[in-house]
Each structure stands twice: as C-alpha cells, then as structure tokens.
Image (cartoon, rainbow, N blue to C red; front, side, top):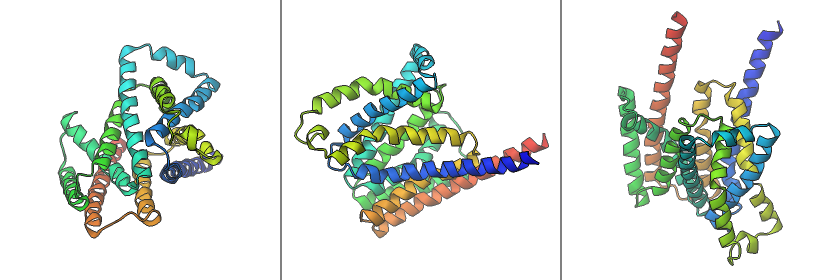
Amino acid sequence: MTKPVAKPETSQAAIALSLSVYFIWGALTLYWKELHGFDPFELIGWRITSSILVLVVVMLATGRLVPLLHSLRNPQLLLRIALASVLLTINWATYVWAVVNDHVIETALGYFIAPILTIVVGVFVLHEKLRGIQRVAVSFAVGGIIVLTAAYGRVPWIALIIATSWTFYAYLKKKVPLQPLESLTAEVIVLAIPAFIYLCTTWNNVDSVNNTASSVEWIFVAFTGVITAVPLLMFASASQRTPLTILGPMQYIVPTMNFLIGWLMFDELLTSSKVAGFSLIWVCLALVLTDLFRTQRRQQIASNRQ
C-alpha cells in the first residue's frame, strides 16, 4: 500500500522542483539587471571565476573531481568540451549584454527560436527528414523572423546569436559523455585561464567592478557562481524523475518570463508588428509541441503493444 502512494508524491515533488528551476532561470534576468552598470564581459569573467569555486567544491565533496580530470585526458573529449565552452561563453555574454542594455524581449525571442533551429540542425547536419507539420512550423518561424526584422528595422541579431549558440551548444553536449554537473565543471575549467586573464586586465579600469561596485553589488557579483551552479544541480535531480513530455513544455517558461519582464517591468517597446512576429513564432512552437506529443504518444502505444 505504501508504494503506490510514494510514486505520486515523488512525481509531484520532481515536477515542483523542475518548475522551481525554470522560474529561477527566468528570474535571473532581474538578477543581471541589478548589475547593469558594469561591463557585461567582465561580469561573465566573474561568473566563470566564481562558478569554478562553487563547482570544484561540490565536485570535491562528492568525490567526482579527480575522475573528471582523468577523463579530460582524452583529446577528443577535451576538444568537444572546449568548443562547448566557447559556445556557452558566447551565449552567456550575449544574454547578459542584452539584459543590461535593455533588450530583454529580444533574449526571449532567442530562446523561443532555439527549438526551431534544433529542427534545422536535424535536417542539415543529421540529414533528418521534416514531417509535414514540421515544415509548416518552420515556415511560420521564418515568417516570424521576417516580420520581426521589419519591426526592429534590422535583423534580430541578438536573438539569432542566442538561439544559434544555444542550439549548437546543446548539440555538442549530446556528444559529451558526461553528466550535466561534470560537463559544466569541465567547461568552466577550460574557461578559467581566459576569464582570469580578462579580469586581471580590467581590474584597474575606471568603470570596473573592483573600482565602482558597492558592497551589495559585490555580493551580487560574488554569487554569480551560485546562481549558475545551484539551479543546474536542482535540474539534474529533477530531470531524472520528470518525464520529458513534461520537461519539454516547461522550457518555454524562461523566455515567456523574459518577454513579460521586458515588456511589463522594463517598459521595452512592444509594437503591433513585433506582436505579430512573436505570434508567428508562438504558432510555430505550438505546432512543434503538438507534433512532439503525437510522436511520443504513438511510440508509447507501439511500446505497450510489444
């Protein structure tokens, strides 16, 4: 009698934890906005440096650091980690730059576009075939980007850099045979020396964190490692117990929050043409999710028959 009760409770706890992680990631836009007075690239340097401290402590405490360092002796693995770390840095830096320079809504667009680019990578890199509904979805996405290009008066390059870097980062991560915590730790280890050198070169700049940060701002800077590592640890735990059919739609919580934060809290301009462009992107995502659910349902039915 106790086992049937325990399973729903565990599932509910995992779903609640997953939701918490995505809401934390969405709220981090507000965190970075508090540091808008500093150079975004310097902030990324601090994020990497402080993340190293947090992640190394966690890895040492769990006895996973030495095995990770041994695995990095593999040249192919190290190369993939290095490439992933470059893409992660591009993604982080673009996102933080956009937030502190009042382009929060465009960051939301980037993370809305990312799943669509994943489909494109599947077609052109992995030579997968598009199903009918996917062709329609991609057409809506292309239309949305065209409308938004006209609305912005330029190509939405911030969104495209965020989407592209995240898509190829996720693709490379699939080629890395490491758990999420180990993988991120390896990436920041690779980035440690460049980040440290950059912080040293900017240390005495007139507008550097060292010369201008208040006590409260120093706390925010110091905890950039914590806000990077802790949600990842939470997600690693939740994802093991939460079905992908639930996790998949949850990923849109973050860009939705960014969209609302940029619009409602930071008063970023949202014209009717931008709404039209976003609407086309949202139709695309709805079609992609519908196709995902149908495919997984067919697979589940086929599996049950076997």
